[in-house]
Image (cartoon, rainbow, N blue to C red):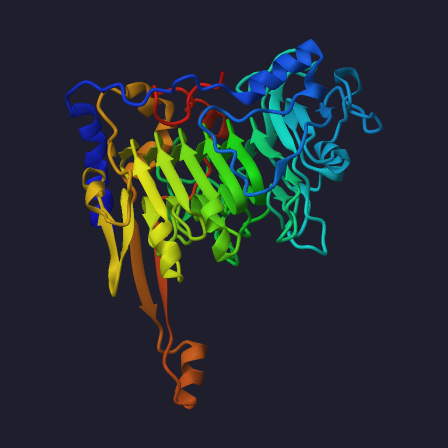
Length: 510
């Protein structure tokens, strides 16, 4: 592991010295943000009569008999809204996003102005539905667009920041939980589920050691990194710390079906997945997002339907920037993937993304369907992506052996990937704007990351004396000290990563 991180340090040098011009590959053609359409509808007063449209190229095959018609538009503004308003006009905006979700019905649209939204009575999280089964609240097909000015005259997600950023709240829930399902066998209309233009940040809530470069145990790699390392769940901090919680919680959790899109969002400092989703019949598109410093994995989507329905489930993960995904523990034992190919989905397309500095692998494809016929139907497409400084670019399973690490240049040789596999390459030289947009102290700390492991044994400890009396094994202890582990990333810097590489990673929102 230590040798690996020394090699990583050479990668950054290679990015600078590697010659050649970047080819213009797969530029975004006519990428239109549906939220921009929503903004025009607000301005023209027609928002109530038009449902958001899918971007060009998005599938609309939901496996259901019909698609529901458009509903109402609700307005939410933390600063200008009122707790008792109806939310149906910009001048009568609601104050609470959770109240708007509770009030909305299927296929309604919610437009959210800048602010920090923490749910009813600042409980720390937002939810649409609770359980996805026939006997509980199964949620609604609604669309949520952030990034509006307080008077709703302008939409700019980088200027009018709409965020979910708890501070000292104690909660056991994802920052946002979205359920939109119907009972199995249901053949009626379904609608759209859209999450667009929100910042999900747990960095102000997580427990970190206070930054201290003089004390290696705090995991502070250098000056300029905001905090020491993340303090794992059930750990007892031994040094000064900041924050409130360290339990495993998602940024965005979903159990959905129909037409689903997550776009123009930022997932930063999420201590248990940026996005963790279950997808029923339909199509999910995850595009134009930034994932930074998430733990476990940046994005994991499983199919959630019976075998007969797998052909109606598809996923498109494209034009996302995925950086610094961290492993489950500070010993770097498992997890730490940027994107995971999971079971239960017929077709998965992963393309035009940037994967960088992921502590286990950029992309993982290690799971197989138990039904061999279903496995034969699957398409795991991985093409036209940029990679840099990942421990592995692709990790695949090997029957009866350990997993195999595949560099970008050899992805075409991985038979588990396909039928599309072309265009996976290291980040070309000449992308200094992108490298410079990354928080430099954080990047420097990652590139020089080291892990020190030590063991100790005290024969005269109370535990070992008792163990000897009963003929039990003696006990020792092991200390693992990484120079850096899941430290807080400055969330505002994550916004700088939009639009830095034409055609790859998160593009500048229109």
